[in-house]
Amino acid sequence: MTISDWSTVVIFGLLLFIWLLPFIIILSSNRTHGKEKLAWILAVIFISWFAWIFYLLLAPVSRQRTRVD
Figure (cartoon, rainbow, N blue to C red):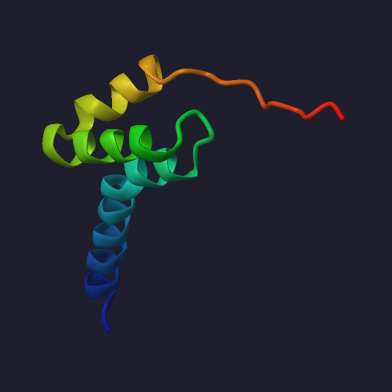
């Protein structure tokens, strides 16, 4: 592979990572669970980046619940 081929692969990989970033953040987040997380993923798919920005701004921040025995 030439330098030009490698640069194309690197640029494509970077663009793919940027495109997948909202999915990675939503799926790894503890801010939402279950159907709410699915709804955010579908919103990102159908509404694109605006939904991801809304997710960061509007998704509830829940505290970790600890059980007291």
